[in-house]
Each structure stands twice: as C-alpha cells, then as structure tokens.
Image 1 (cartoon, one colour):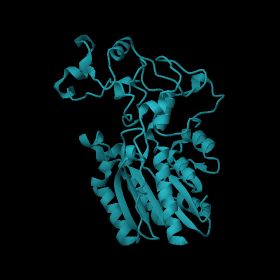
Image 2 (tube, helix red, strand yellow):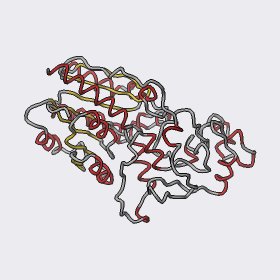
Image 3 (cartoon, helix red, strand yellow):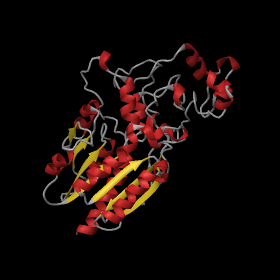
Image 4 (tube, one colour):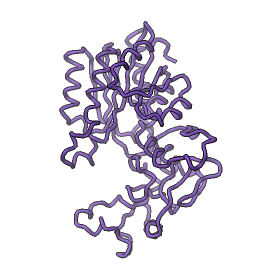
Length: 353
C-alpha cells in the first residue's frame, strides 16, 4: 500500500476503477456517484472506501472531500464521466450538446480546482479528445493550474483486457512529467480463457451456483436467429424470413454486428450497457443459444469472479438485469484501473522519494 497518498474516485459507479487502484496499491478514500444503486457493490468489494451518493455539482462536495483527505501526503483525484455524449454513436446525432451529461467534464474541472490534487486521471471514450470542451479542460490544467499532462488512446487488448476496447486516458500531475505505464501484456487475452469455463445456461436461465450468471430470455424469432448464426458471422447468414426490419433498409446494410455471435479465440467486442441483449451488438454467446450473461460481461470487464453486485439474500424478484448490465457496462475495466494505478504509484515514488 502506498502510504503517503490517497485517492477519491468521481463517477465511481460500482467500483471498477476504484478496485483497480486498490489492486495497484493505492488507498481509495471514497467514491462519488449520484446513482445510489451502486452503493452495495462499491462498498462490499472495496472495504475501506466510502460510497458518497452525491451529484459532483453539489457545492458541499469539495468541503466534504477536503475533510476526507489526510492533511499531509499526495492527493489523487480520478474519474470517468459518463461517456454517452462523446461516443461515436451519439456523435451522429444533432442536439447531442443538449445532453446534460455534456457538462460533466466542466463539473469535474470545478471539483479539481477546489481540491487541488497533486495527481489526476480521467478516462473516457477516444472521441472526447477532439471536443473543444476537453481541449479547453487540458489548456486550463496546463496553463492556469500548472499541471503536466499526457493523454493517449489506449488499446485495452494490449494490456491484457479481453475486449476490443479503446479508451482515452488522461493523466495530469503537479509533481512532474507523467505518462501511462508502457508495460504491455505478452499476448492478447481471448474470450475463451475468460468465460469458457462457466456453467452452460439457457436463454432466460440462471446458474444455481452464481446468481449473476443469468441470461436474458429470447423471443421465438430471436432464438431462430441465433441458432442460424455462426461465430464471427452476421445476419447475412440467415434465411431472408429471419431478417429484422433494420436489415431490410438500405441504412441498415452496414450493421453487421447486430444480432451476431462472438468468437472464442478473439477478444470480445466492447462491453456496453446492453451487452446482455442479442439484438444490441455482437453479444451472442459463441456456442450457446443466448446472449452473454451478466457474469460473463463482468468477467470481460475484468471484475474478479467473486465480485458481488447485489446481496446474496436479495429476493429474485428484486434483481434487475437491466440495472446490473448498465452498472457493468458503464464501469472502467478493473485491469485498466490497475494499469492507471501502477502508473500513479511509480510516478509518486519517483517524485517524492
């Protein structure tokens, strides 16, 4: 454990980034998120970190966090603002700047200015780096607040994360130059070695040993579609009678990954908030006639197999698969959090020795 430093995680969700930082040896004091349904998973799996259910725009938050940080030592502030406004999908549509989430980068910056942390990390989708709001944020950190900055798009497969996911990682420090740890995995991690040993379950089924290993049900036509799908294939493999309306339109001809099966011996597609839906992307199981289970999505997000997302005694009727898939899909992969954490630990040891 890095004894002379402590971190706070903004937009913490269920704790993917926090868990990675803790695994790297960083003490995390608290996670802040407006979604109170994340509290159980965050605190259950990150024992010494406190969940604070607040909007980061709340004027009382900086004082609360100031009181949490030790009076001496290195202050670390990390966060991943919800990325929907900056995603490739959202960028296609006019009016996206009206999304309330668009201003979350500014809110992050306001908290940062009031807390004056020594080290900062922010993770988001690659397209954010092209937006004026991010460029202005970087300029303010460098010119007005005296931070040294690095920002790069990370191919997660290069760091042993078993999904084709690219993320923008920004690091900033007042201690000196900082950049992401260049150490890479020796080889990409594949879908098979990540989820291949899990108990087979049917569409709509739940494992008797792990209640997070549950799969969404399929309609009769979607069951026919997945049965006609091959790993790595597309809807073009189906009989014409199975085509969805979107595939029959000229605008839908390029949607080759919708209603599609994954492949065993490649990293998975990017895990999104709808990874448990067969019709939302290439989320069909490589062999079984169903979409990914919630546990499979969590493992592909590099959450440990024993990460708990709801109480063990929670009644079945209160388990919301939709909410859980959102929690898992929105998370920073734990392994990426650990890489960011290792970078920060090395940086602090280098500049405070």
